[in-house]
Length: 594
Image 1 (cartoon, rainbow, N blue to C red):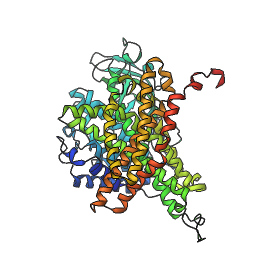
Image 2: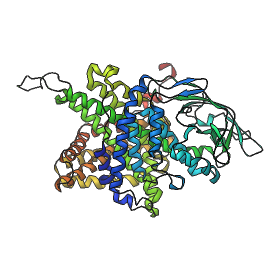
Image 3: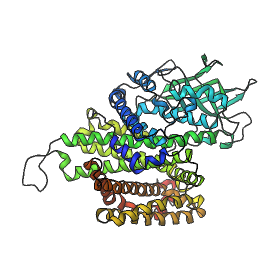
Image 4: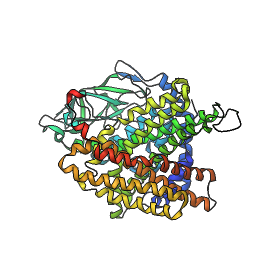
């Protein structure tokens, strides 16, 4: 399997230059996130990812987590790697210093998370879920609960889970049936079963903090009657030591297509002691904090796996010799990366990965502004962009992860179908990400409904001027930049027409738009990706003109943006047409015709 090297030059370029690190360090509390610190953190994370975590991807795929007698043994090497992970303080990069975190910007912790996910998607899932649980507790729990759990979770000494799904309640959380019976001491007894719980049981830490959705006896029906509870694997004594074992047991783990190193548990709560977060019947709002965090992080998994698949395919293509170059008088066989179709596939993989990464980093920057800016208007605009882009980051990035991993197999040819090449694992591992945290169809419906139609496109009114400003800058530069701008202009027009139709049609029959919601999300994702690649290209050209940075890296940025404009953005016209006109056969289809 290819040795993984984190794309540090790409990460640093985005953080420092494209998204202007100086404006982030100017925010209150982020003053220490200097260029030197960013370089040092990414460099050290890259080493840990390359040397310690990445080798576990293959071994954990071959020997996954195992279950026996309600206990899980993780894949060989996971426990030791996790110990190094928490010893280095990596779990606490972006969290509150009051509870032991480093308090660094989310755009930086997002980049570090990419390294863990590219190294091993299965390993990266554990800190990802813990991070979501930390966010929910930090935002919604009582001061006493924060004091009890946050420091250990932020350090990584304890991990966290998210217990939503039940055998009879998948994405429809209104159907949650787990019970929570209040006790005289203020605690609750939690009973029920949850499925698909990532790292619901493992041997890497001595406690696991479960966040569980359940209903109290008098709760109203539907989503209005859901409450959120903290249910630790081991109860915590007043002095912080661990007490008795809570009857929250893993009764099995799933046998899966991929991510074999990540134990996906079926959890049985047998009158386990739980503690209410916030107040009864407010659980869904609390859990959405965790879910939105998870959606952004799952998007990160998508392009992180794409990066690993790309590196694998690129290395193979640069070594595999086969056939003379088409049209060449020299009949000497060349490496396959020289052949036009293979080069097209590699550039497709590269440009899609970089587009998804840029959207994610841009959204992370908005989170930093929303969290720390003292400018109310800036915070309001940042929140609008976060709301709009969260379903896009999640769905677009994970769809692209699957597409890029699939292209990686194709680049390998017959070897791509052989496990020893390493290429199949990335497709198997990334495939779940399009299902995690609400399937991508659910994300698309969220985008067209709550994020666009229901507010009359108000969030887009914040985004579009940013895009058009950079399109104007690209036009002014002429040459290939003007070509990029022309492609973006077409995509903008198609997006605006699709949005106008969406807002008008949604009032009368939302099913029409829902039929093609995934096309609208892809249209938006391609527009945002093309915009940010073009913005990156403009900055890269300025650096070339100033004699700054690696010339080959800057030229590659320009060429990647050009490729995206030539080969990816033109599908915007088809996507608009499918979205607006593609509902007839779907909505008229009788059950018997399926």
